[in-house]
Image 1: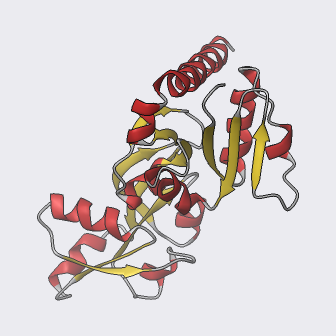
Image 2: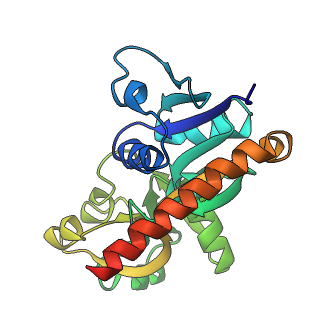
Length: 220
């Protein structure tokens, strides 16, 4: 009997796009597409189990081995700091993680004792500014981070930027790019060894489908 492969997916857009790729591989995603109140879903023919969880929980499930593989945004993966194998860029959910603020935001360090950064990603912010040798005060927010500089709570923000329309509407601008963000396939380190054949089958299949979709998009 085939090993059961458990896949942790972030509910919403990332899961839907992942289902499309899996279906192109011949995997039945009818249960996870219509979960109702069920928490654990199956494609029993392929012996694949799905768990739909909050985006921030995907790295936790994979790290603890409850899930063998997971699909999660690069931003969430960086913030988690979990020792996972990042095996594939799925290319969807693209955006940027940036430092943003008013055009003269960096000059505020002259008048403020501590440079303040508002963010939903405190670990990423700390690592980024540590790499620059800069001391900061992190103000952790979970709502409209852009409000930080507008009302004087912070000097800048570190956040995900897609269109940039909210920044522009509030007089803010991108000051620095931190990294590119997209959906990533991650794997538990033990599963990569103990279930190698099945895990590689899934990784290789998704790699082929991503390449085919990318090639089709380039031809249009």
